Image 1: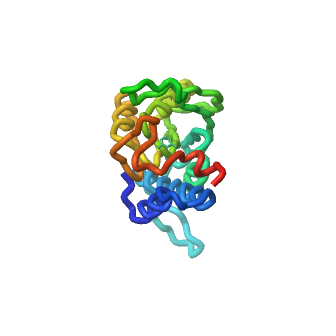
Image 2: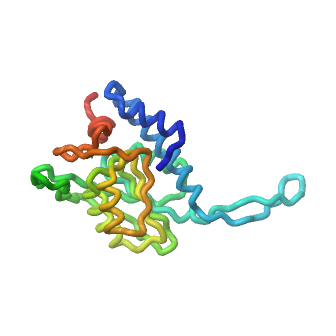
Image 3: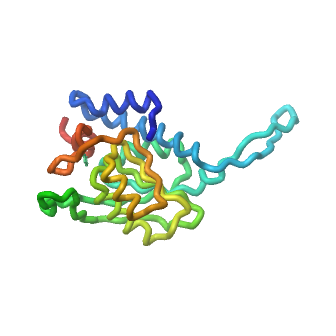
Length: 214
Ligand code: URA
């Protein structure tokens, strides 16, 4: 969990019902950037030497994995989050998946939904890649597991990272149950999912708030 005070403050703005569309999107962009910094912290570094303009050698670092990142954005709410992530992973290859939870598929007493995947455009994924799947709301895990099923047809990465803003324990357990080696980055873990599949207290419908009529 990303407990950096700035991330928590931005999340508080996102949760606030009075936050309007532009501020909301900007907040997601900023969180994407902060999440990128956190992900980089987990990457291996190697020591390198460079020569400065003074003709002197200086020791530094290189993060080889930075050049082996594939980012998948799950339309549409992930778009601002990805805008922030690519500020850090500037050389990332990108993929897009359009996924829709089928509201009618939700039966009483169950938290899970069917997910309709209507568009998949993903680059080849190599064994030394870090795959980052961005989706701000990890509620039941139905969407992310459906997306991963499609994306992993394009290759097996070295790491699978889910970049979310708010998750639930239910969703995390579901994703880790199906993809035990995946790693979940999130800014908050909320306690509930309501009967419509929304995270409570949550922040509402992230796609509507980022691109809706507010
Ligand atoms: N998707 C959203 O946009 N919000 C939620 O609370 C759950 C899923």
